[in-house]
Image 1 (cartoon, rainbow, N blue to C red):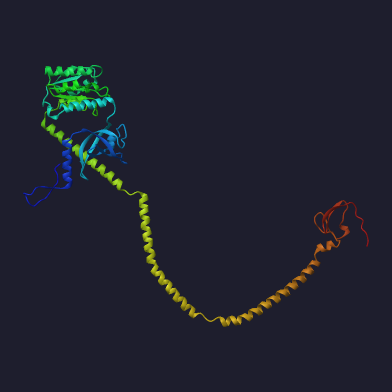
Image 2 (cartoon, one colour; image 1 turned 180 degrees about the horizontal axis):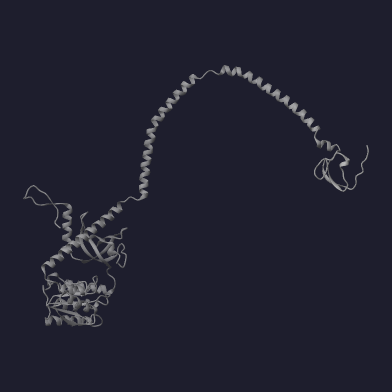
Amino acid sequence: MKPEIADTNQDSAPPVLTVSALNQAVARLLERSFPLAWVSGEISNFTRAASGHWYFTLKDDAAQVRAVMFRGRAQYADFMPREGDRVEVRTLVTLYAPRGDYQLNVESIRRAGIGNLYEAFLQLKNKLTAEGLFDGERKRPLPGFAKTIGIVTSPQAAALRDVLTTLRRRAPHVNVILYPAPVQGSGSAEKIAQAINTASLRAECDVLLVCRGGGSIEDLWSFNHEEVARAIAHCRMPVISGIGHETDFTIADFAADLRAPTPTAAAEMAALPRADWLGLLEMHADDLTRTLQRYLSDHAQTLDWLSRRLVSPSMQIAHDRLKLRSLHIRLAHASRKPMAKAQFELLQLRGRWAAQLPNTEAHKMRLSPLSCRMANLISARASQHKQELASLSSQLELLNPQRTLERGYAIITDAKGKILRSPKHLRPNTAINVRLADGSAEVGIASVQPSLE
């Protein structure tokens, strides 16, 4: 992908790059110049975004650098980093093009400085580094076409089967010589160094593979001995180390001319095809992969940056409330003037209406004596009606049957409630009801004897 160049009118003028083209070119340069490497430091400003990506700063006493670990890689980490943790990260140096920030794209992470074995590993590494045993100047290039490949490993190791299978698939014409040595247990380091020295003395192969399958730091400790590192460094042919998994590092890896992440990868490096076009194709594929990863990484970071710019609903509501209050004040000011004008017009209309009202005082003076006369007439008429009502009430009281009963009279009715007014209506062995002033009673007739008055 060629950088974008702005048009110029002068042919002799130097090309003018856009900012984006410049950043992309710098990103490609960084990724090609710095392969995957382990970097140690202290965690600072750690943030886990909603998307699952990790953002933090890796620092030491003198410097710091931004780092990002995307969700696809972070989900395989066996711990969650915290502020102040000392870690080691396997990372690719790159550039975040939208902002032009130099940063580390972290592939894997592990804790640093844990255990006595790790301390011994660091001490031996520092000692051999000071001696120049790991200097890049003494690293030898691999032969372009290897006819014979030597392997230092255990005959029973699964790594040997992986290497043989890979070589048989990629380069069946290559001869393989095994230099057997135990890769674990007491005394295995001396035997590994002896096998490497034997291969160096015989000079039977073009490149030597020192390999072993994955395991814990104790399982791989045979390759962290000084005699193994010196045997690799003094070997007459180039040495490729393929020990453990991709995240495992041993002293033998630093001493070797080339370090492979796995035994299978070591076999692939030792038997690379020679075709130039295939190498060019692989280079373009790597460039395309890095460009795509950088494109996805940049957009992932841009998405996180945009997500942080989103306003929360509560803040949006508060902003709208302030806006509504401002509009309310403006509306109050806008409506105050017409309301004052309307009130003034109302006062004027009230004054005009008051001026048009007729004088009612004279009518009130004429109406007052008439009201008094009417009240007197109504009072007199009410007194007359009260007297008439009292008279009628007295007459009605005289006709009240209860008063008649109180004078000693009674009302006799048969069983059906019919009033009996003659003795002939009375029958023996029947019951009659006698109503008196204070109540009524049921009376049985045994016999009837009419009497003459």
